[in-house]
Image 1 (tube, rainbow, N blue to C red):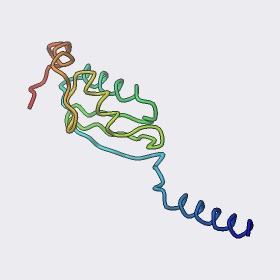
Image 2 (tube, rainbow, N blue to C red):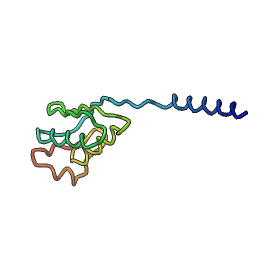
Image 3 (cartoon, rainbow, N blue to C red):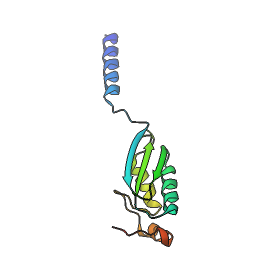
Image 4 (tube, rainbow, N blue to C red):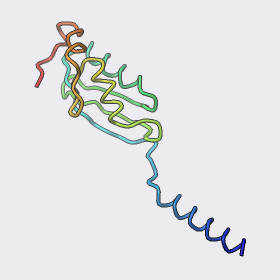
Length: 113
């Protein structure tokens, strides 16, 4: 009887492990981040890299797009967007607080939507 119970427990444990969604260690994202210049580029990328699990962050001045590679086992895209907003920059999902935005240099203060 013990062997039957053990077999059932092992079967269901194995099934539940397979049913869990596997998180991507090299997930790629492209998000919109408002900014103007090279100073913005440095701040945005620094904010992204401040989040544990971000492997690559490259913000384009021309397109206002931040290309990211992150480990989804360590972080989420929302955590990265929140860190960028704390630095004063609006993302497509998380907006910076006025206090953070107001601390940006004049050349970095973009037109807010």
